[in-house]
Image (cartoon, rainbow, N blue to C red; front, side, top):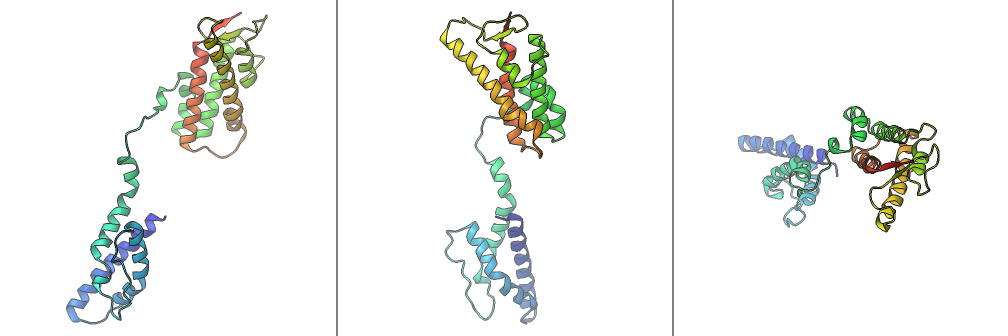
Length: 234
């Protein structure tokens, strides 16, 4: 629905009607404005029906002369008001919902993404966040031979650590089924984030929508918090 076009048509009709009645009251002559009103009337009726579908008296009468009663000009003014404010209704009248402040994401994510985000380079922001987490994970494990999804796989592997292959462990009793489940979940979430989010951010063209990018940053923030909370076993 083209709200700008609808609003402009209503405003033009309202202005033409005012001009018509000014001339009509002055000398009673048929004017060019009357012809314009005849031409615009069917479109105006359709617009007003969309804005107020339950109003029964929006009819094109087909009289030889345009009449004020054909369209209630107060409805035209009302329609202009609706279209002017409609975009604000979605935000200002929406119910309160939780928000996700980007600067409250894990520091590994937001510190890396912030510069790109502020310049509206959203795909680059996601890529920077993923790269940052990879660097912090390499530092935590003391490894430079692996990166991204493969590094996450080695880090969260349930295998025992080996020389040169330390592991990350979720805090808690490692024999507890709940801890074991979180360990497997951290592995799968981390790999999924790199496969599904980091790789497209690095190789695809075109930018992400702001909301989509924020959701992806939030996913990486969860991954970062899991890595940050784990202890290293060697």
